[in-house]
Image (cartoon, rainbow, N blue to C red; front, side):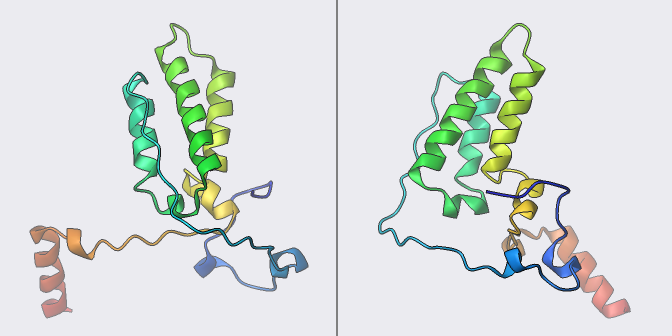
Length: 140
């Protein structure tokens, strides 16, 4: 899904020419119907269940197909098993984290595929921040 190497810069930080691979067309398949988000398993460790449930609210989930959701379920099952283990295995946790990166769960994973999520937070500004903005506009 992504490329190897260091995490790419955000689009507003990139300059210069694009490579031929970056300019190449992508094959597209048109599929109809909404993708149902499966439920988290209630037997999972609390942190694995919370991670899975957060995926539905994340911006990258709009591109998830049913197979992506099942892959996420598998990874969260494995994560739950490791979190509940007496001695979690570092190699297994790293493998799970790599799989989550493939699902674009992290900022680094999204940058590798040149996906940026801009979350509109205009409805969540609290009174202190609004007052500070008002003060800045009068002073500056």
